[in-house]
Amino acid sequence: MSASEAHEPTTGSKRPVTMEKIVNLCKRRGFVFPSSDIYGGLGSTFDYGPLGVELKRNVKEAWWRDMVQRRSDVMGIDAAILMHPRTWEASGHLQNFTDPLVDCKKCKQRFRADHVAGDRCPACGGELTEARRFNLMFKTFMGPLEDSANTIYLRPETAQGIFVNFANIVDTQRVKLPFGVAQIGKSFRNEITPGNFIFRTREFEQMEMEFFVKPNEQDEARWFDYWVEFRHHWFLKYGIKADHLRLRPHGQEELSHYSRGTTDLEFQYPFGWGELEGVAKRGSYDLDQHAQFSGKELTYFDEEARERYRPWVIEPALGVDRAMLAFLLDAYDEDVVENEERIVLRLDPRLAPIKVAVFPLLRKGGQPEKAQAVREELQRHVTVAYDQAGSIGRRYRRQDEVGTPLGVTVDHQTMEDDTVTLRDRDSTQQERIPIARLAAEVSERIGGHR
Image 1: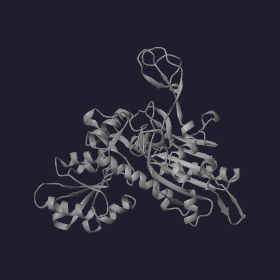
Image 2: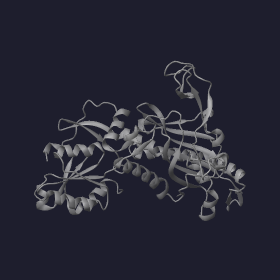
Image 3: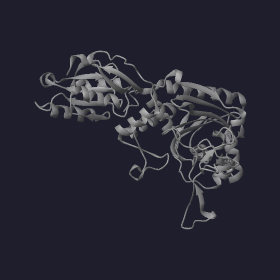
Image 4: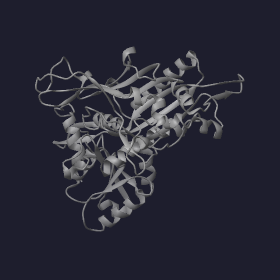
């Protein structure tokens, strides 16, 4: 092990992170692959590899931990993807969930009308057709007959699963306003112009919470401001840079059909500012609609006021894939260690797909066997990688590149006194730790979470 490895890394002529760098890193190191890659891929669909699925799981667990497990006023559900088709009629998605679509008469390419400046094709300059509305929901059939009576839809949002279960939750749980219901699950949108890697895809995962409050503007405003601030702070807590976040209230003309007011938390992606999370005032729109279409009451009885009403709703809604992209972008860094450039993902340890990597310094002298024993002990607590191929410096670099916060090296001294070297990813500083204390030290440094 080189003594100079413990020196502080120096910043080289750092180049700004680009989407190309992130896409290449994700493919090369097993975070994200194009779906159906051996067949040439399928437009804007992606598969999460061994490291990507761990990072994605950690993002979801961090959200669930802070939004549900650590709160007494929020509970969770897991609703089905396939829902009664009347759900989407009631919610307004059949009528309103559309994008304006234009086609080029010359090259036949298709574009969203609101993404095209002027009346000419951005690809070839040809004439564009008049805009027409295109519904974004995927349509399929339930049962053996493919006819209108058996038409159903893949859900375009997880929120409706919460609203249609409102009465079930109120009837079975001891709830008191205000309270929230959270859900993580897949949604599907037949986007006309997906792109920018996992920023906009047709199949994606959402983390949504519907927070029910008393139906008055004072309570609505107070809880809306609370959740905007809470969600803003959440991103900062897990490593998003403050100057890469901003709040943007929606103009009246861009509000969704259900919204009384929406503020986006926007992130500065390499391609510009874009939505990361939306916080919306949904009012009682959804409960009103489902009550009308289902014939069910869908109200809450306020025991203190001795009255029955439909609550209003505040909704923080975040895409898992989009959040993962933001965390990767802000964690990506390039510096120089021992006169050698390295790529390092400075992920918050709670999000890192691998928490610790174990290395034997040499492939002899009992070091590999000792290192494997250390690995097996640590694996009882955290995700662990093992690597004995190549120089120790190169092995460190491989783990730095995927964001592993800690490295454990078994060397000659380990065989004498049962201590190992614990290395920090960001500073590259090292210290000797007794193996007996290693699991507790690792847990403390990564925040006590897998």
